[in-house]
Image (cartoon, rainbow, N blue to C red; front, side, top):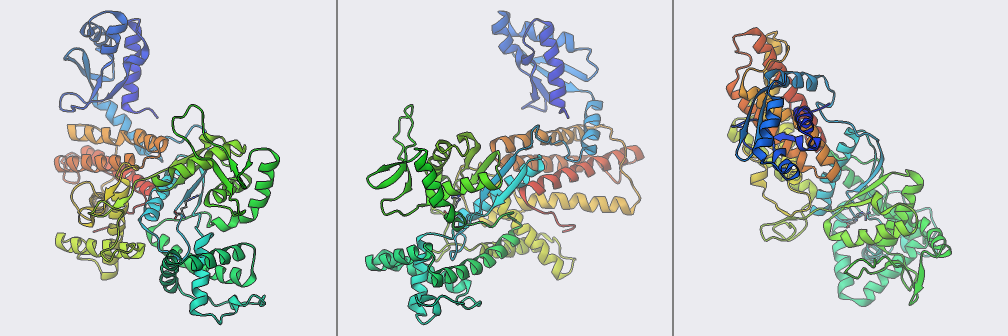
Length: 587
Ligand code: ARG
């Protein structure tokens, strides 16, 4: 489905070609000065160089051949040779009715659907999710929604951090508190109790204590290392205890992700690929992909054409231990065998970029995937007012459940101030406050350029004015309420006719969705969706202020405006579904 800019580009391209100039010069874009004309073509400037003629003369010739085009209402040449174009009202009307009929309201499916694995979330067992995991979850979820929407087959994997030293640290800490549990008796092989000996709250107390103790004492650290090795080589009691850690953590994490509206296809963890490591290492050795270096096994991944030195990929340490990068390589192998995707996206903090670059180069060298099938989708941090990654006032990590509660509390207070959702029952009001709170958090995160840091400012996030999630939800709720009134009054949407600038501007905004969805998809940058939603909501609000809908005198105008409003709502809710927010029915 071609946008209005595409259609005009086609016409202008032909006009350039008629002058013996490249068709590509006819690119028409929305103008930066819609008060002068809604569209513009700047090709005459580049054409001047090619043709050796003044740009204005070229613009005049192009304009002359477009003058009588059935789609064009008016046309002016400005400055040195900008061609300003205004399409006929019918062009807008036709485009709007095509968008209304389209299930995706103007966003194109991809030409060749791909299989895509998205690795995101990445929380760790026994540790509360920190802001990095929150950002990963919000951004990764938006990408999984967008990729599916455009037709790809997506498999999302939470990729739990459930392996490695932190597990040994926990085991040894529990052994200190409850030494008599059967898990610590090396001679006992089971069966072990079904009831977990610790709760999530216990784990969140025990883990920081264990980690601090291991920092303070070498012996304590060695003990934790030994426990990790024992766990990884299958000591029955440790494995049984570790399973409890994973189950207890997973329950808590699932509850958190559910309340955020984020769902994963797979709940795999680092531990799942541990059994693949020995075979993978043997295979890489036998194919000469890895070689020994001071007792360790490495895969060199530096490139000659690169200024910086890139450290080698460390497959096995000299003590034979596998590392975080080994696990990630084994996970790639697992994904090749299980999903064999065309593309794997890793939505992880930008500070892990060297890690992923190493892993991806190693995977390429191993022949698992080409380097360009693996992408690190890095993001900046959410900072506190001190410019450092956000911490609570007590200096701890902010738990997701606490964050949602804070945002909901603030949303509830704001709704009360603004008199919103005050005439519904308490249960519905609470659900609305929650939807507003979550939209505030998600939109605040996604509306920034993914790679930049931003400052946590709940007051700003939860405002009903400005570029915020609550503003957008409210815009949708207002349209919903109008649709209900229309239904009660028996008014039905009809053919779209464009009779005012605000209606044309609304159609132009609607028409931008295809490009926004495409850009967000190609660049993995959800803020293009947020920008689009905001632009659409603003265009709707101008339309609504200037073009009476249900009180329009003319029945045809009323039906047309109602159809435009219905389209705006449909597209707004489509964008919401891509950023993972939900508009309540009323507020
Ligand atoms: N668990 C890791 C962390 O908390 C993030 C995992 C990211 N994904 C991956 N495949 N390495 O930092």
